Length: 395
Ligand SMILES: Cc1ncc(COP(=O)(O)O)c(C=O)c1O
Image (cartoon, rainbow, N blue to C red; front, top):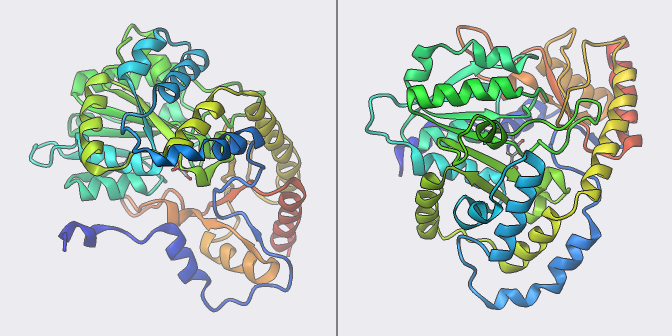
């Protein structure tokens, strides 16, 4: 067996099952705030497009994706992030992927050089655990930077010595679990560091469309690169997904875009990997990227839930509405694992302890004392869950 498999940590949900083993949940309906799976309805016109294109299953799809899909993504990128040259983007700077999870993993296998002396991969802490697994299986070393409520400060506090050891930088923007957003100045700083210290940036932007209307749309990495004159996006890659934007997590559809030289190598890697996207999914995805109406409605639904849930929770815990994403990341007046057990036992609500999303650094886990609450369920269920949390903390 590959000895690096033994380096992988159990996934947070595996740890959660162990934590909750043997606990008898309260005799109430289960409300899951644990898994970040959108429960809003998928857009009907996308489902229709999928069904109408089932005949496409008769053909082998190309790994680089159909012209229709790449053009649709290129147009979306240009409009959303104020980029130019959609033809160049579609021709050489975009690749469809089967959800960003597989691509966030695969990119590390493609770009990392395990024989180099600098083998660090910088990543946030707490974080999406795929970054760590991908790094370990590519023979490199996860190096964490702690994240707080101020994404710019987090990036600015990384030293040149840390950047010098770095081959690849995983940025999660907007952040999971914090929902914090890095400003254009913060992104520009990071791109400058990537040039100065010779590393690539992978910007996981799968929550970029789930922003609070009052906060406005987050700036993307390619947008920042373009604005500073890096119009071929050297060292920059963004990862986008239909899972959260369009409530289609089961469709497994996303894309990566940016630096043409990396995209070309990634295409080569993926050709061997054999992970092309099924033709009906490609067609339905092209249709989904062309529509913004359903995305705005989705945002409005999250905005409403945040307004009511945060108002209820604020008197009992330190919690605020993040600029983006669909999580709450409150600080608790008790241990996160204990709270997680009690809220199941007393109220049949599932949450994720913050410490399970982080790694201990110098004796401290930056996730400890927090829980992650995914506001993905219907509004009435989220409100019900908030009331149940209040009753546990008041008791
Ligand atoms: C931070 C982050 N990145 C990437 C993903 C993967 O999304 P998908 O593979 O559905 O595109 C998720 C899913 O929860 C996530 O939270």
